[in-house]
Image 1 (cartoon, helix red, strand yellow):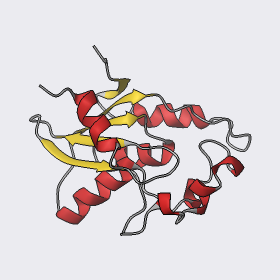
Image 2 (cartoon, one colour):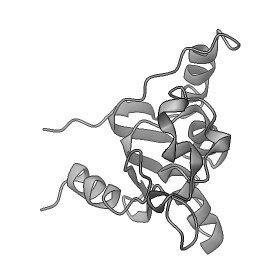
Image 3 (tube, helix red, strand yellow):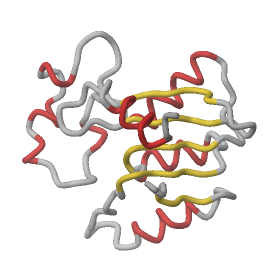
Length: 155
């Protein structure tokens, strides 16, 4: 039987981002798989084909910054927009991901009414001089989800 980690790793392989392949799965309150998504540029063109400057020149950008300059959707963003396009409610669901959501994705997850997040690889909250309380802001969003956020046990 396929584990959640195996499913997520399979979904991530479908990602088209040239920096990092991330996959996510949203599971409803009854345990049903609602939506899956991988990261990458929306539409037919692919980031991996040079259609995203931020990914192409990633060495020029600091970790966790300037996501607004990237034309790729994170896997979490892709899942939420896919559900919206299909008229699927995510309220009460849990998101599973190969990578811990960034601040932008976490805001969308909380705003969409998901109750929890489980992840495989942790995201390092960037140090941002202009926003010294960024980690506090991040953790305050996690507190808004009844089931919180925690790593997936690989055992």
